[in-house]
Image 1: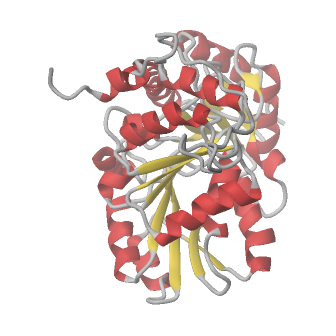
Image 2: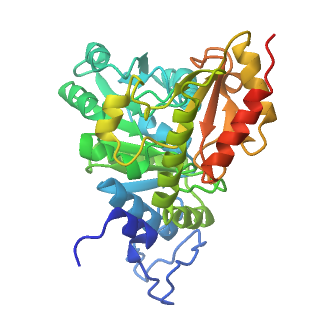
Image 3: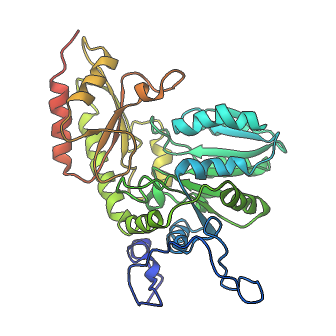
Length: 386
């Protein structure tokens, strides 16, 4: 048989079978500690759950295979994974990150990373020229990219940014939570690290928090990242690891269904009289469409945003009213689950957010797309000019 395709690898969890019981579904390992040999050695390779949990082995291996990387580490959340990338740097290191990105990490960079001595600079990451102008050869140690970037879904050219970062002696880390390895493999485009908030699409069932980091090659820096996980303790529980593997088995089906529906929804509302703008990289007129078409294979993601407006409407009030009157779409934070969610992001992010006040962020689930469209239509129909 030829090399298996990613869909088969994830559906069967690489085909691993529990050798003790011959079970197709793995057991849940809950022991926090492991027996030493009589001569005080650990020939089993296991020492302590915080540093090395057998429950991680299979989901880490699946993600590594899907990303085409050297190794994957699981973390207790996407934030634990993302911040470990920065915590493994040294005081005085210069870091570039996008102006538009996941809000919690943006706040962490502003409130904590700088207090630890990192020099953080937020730039327009979608412009290779802006990245080239901002990097400081020998000083910049990390360029952090999120693409498509939450919640405006702007797109960064990973390959071009990798060339710029490497020429300056920096690593490139990519938050690929929205794209997933189904659509984009950043390591193949030159990235050094890939981060996922595995809470989202990799799990896909809104029932755990988890994060992952996958590295292209081993290094002293990667070993520091491993040390951050073990010493600071942002580790995932055994049951959560089992749930994550469960979710990975249907990753391709869920992502492709969400992509198809998101594309339909974006096209349907692109010229709607009560929608001022649809933000989605799958629309040919969007600013990042050409780059997205080159680096995203098989779809443009299950996330989009609608800017509510129209004649006589206050966009912010109208957006909040739409969110209040949908029936199928659920008003909730997060994304990537089987259920469709929407959220007025400016209210969530507060002062300093780059999010327009008329914006609704939509996470498209796997419901029938016509039901999702009809629900938004009825909510929009109920708007009344001020």
